[in-house]
Length: 204
Image (cartoon, rainbow, N blue to C red; front, side):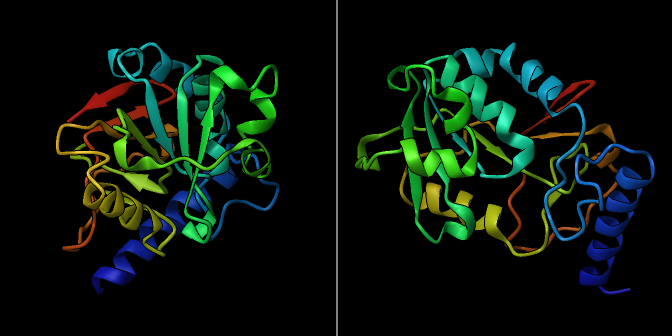
């Protein structure tokens, strides 16, 4: 089995397990997507209670549905939120929780973020926390997404722009089913240093 085939096998096993056990919020499962899992708000609340969250002023988050609770908590906590546009086609969206005046829930969605964001020069911004969606992760911080490399590109771009550094918390929120024993990695794959599931917080 090639490395690519191994990754696809892991993805399918996660999709199958979430769907079979009724843990996907999508009626036909999450195949080809970042899982939108039941309990995503529980994982977000666990993250909310961490020192990493409390010490952050500006949070970067992927646009995946499972991370809507993270984005919502960031905005109602009056944090600045930088969200990647889908496929990075429109770059980055910048929102300020303190200026949303009751529209935090709407702004936490992909469509709402486009409506409530505004242009911002990111060159002088320091991102304190990065949250990515994942299909599967292991306890060493290795991850795989849906297979198109968007998270790796986002992290690499943030590093190249000096918006984050090697000390920035890079994490994902997941369902426990998405935690596996081993994930094969390629040279371009970016490792996480923190994992938050509905049951535990793993720091690497």
